[in-house]
Image (cartoon, rainbow, N blue to C red; front, side, top):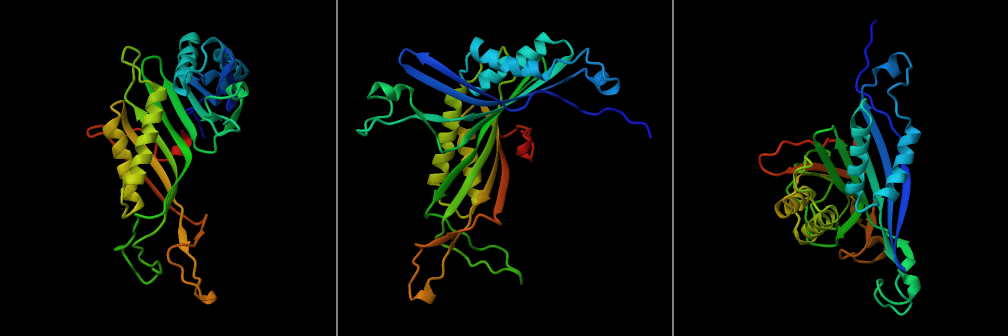
Amino acid sequence: MPTILGQNQYGKAENRVVKITRDGDTHHIKDLNVSVALSGDMDDVHYSGSNASVLPTDTTKNTVFAFAKEHGIESAEQFGIHLARHFVTSQEPIKTARIRIEEYGWERIATSDGNSKFIGADEVKHSFARKGQETRVSQITFDGEKWEVVSGLKDLSVLNSTNSEFWGYVKDKYTTLKEAYDRILATDVSARWRYNWTRDEERMPNWEKSYEQARKHMLQAFAETYSLSLQQTLYQMGSRIINNRSEIDEIRFSLPNNHHFLVDLEPFGLKNDNEVYFAADRPYGLIEATVLRDGVEPKIPVDMTNL
């Protein structure tokens, strides 16, 4: 049966690059995991094995490290833009470049006397501890004319110990869950947001500020929403970002409901007044949805693991 070649891309995945910027005795660190995927006129290499249009994946790896030196790493998004533009404009067969980046955060180690982590003894200026919080993510795609930048985060664990209820739901003969009027609401936030910047001549967002502000509004909405469902909280988190950040048009969340069940202490003659819980890691409810600016068409895939 005849066959034809479908969509394809190639590149070097998970190039781990650490860039140290030395400002006198004070050092700054950027820690990225960069994956490059290139597509274009690649039929011949699949049909005949001709490599005439193939830029080696080893070259893409080398480019990542060279660009860390030549351009620096101001932000994950800006670094991805430099790379995507380079691959599309320097190699005629390459029509589209997709750069995916994970960024791992570090913070300065505090002084022994408890002073601010940004002041104190000289050694603090170049000593870091890995943040035990979220991983920042970005995907930059360029086709020679238009850009698409999707950023976000994953594995941001949040918890409200009260101001959450869950009741009034559908019940059938298999329902055993008791209605809750004061429960723990906990989740590990995975979120992706799409910027409306698409062309070089348009004003580029301040990527670092935008990320910090999107994260801030997301957390504020989680903390300030009296929640009757995780779906309601999700929508408030997305709406807060859309309403406060004009450069963002779409945000998609994937929120596992990290269930905390009250432990029955009556066999031990003890009363559990919403104090002791069993934290169940599985199975878990999984709540997913997209929040959009009115009039905007969704573009972020439902399965965000493909970003």
